[in-house]
Length: 136
Image 1 (tube, rainbow, N blue to C red):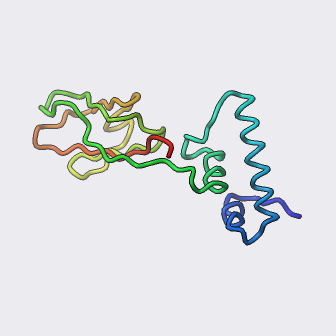
Image 2 (image 1 turned 180 degrees about the vertical axis):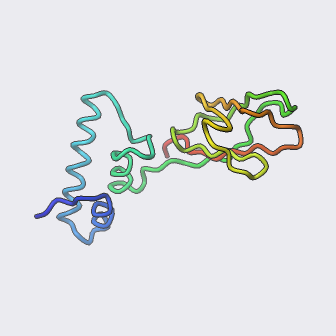
């Protein structure tokens, strides 16, 4: 039996069309979880991590919810600090000002649930964020 060499192989094989391959995926997931437990980490919350992608392939119910948020903070042309309802999962935050996508590190920075803007929005500006947070 050949072991799958890409995530596409894992995902395509978990729909009960190939029970043998699904067993390999489950064994791989068990090995990942054992390694995480030994190291005391769980990278499954990092959307780009291989273990997150494998967990989603093995257990499609392992997902995150999306939050659409208008951060709190005074939009007055001088305030740069805004707060989200919850802390986004790393790499999942999308920030928009008046419908225009903003780039992290260029237009804003994020620390926990706090966004620091480079340029302060004015009262008429619309600041919207979309991000993934809590495990479901």
